Length: 100
Image (tube, rainbow, N blue to C red):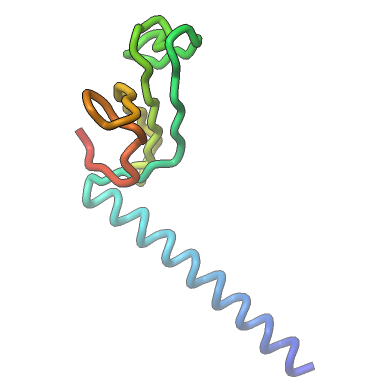
């Protein structure tokens, strides 16, 4: 009986610790102005993919990277030119970046 009570307290402590860490990360993102990557999509020419303020990215002659970042408050979208060798573009979205 005592062991199950002790296990429950450890689970609660782990849950509270996880919540506190999540709140700390979110607060640090809000204060620092940094962004953390949550989703990345490569859009090739000819594909239909519309991004507000950028239009249909597939209509371009150049492939694009669509990067979605969490700011601590909302999700924002950044668009980069795609280049497999990182010349005149990026081969993947930066994992952590600062706001524009």
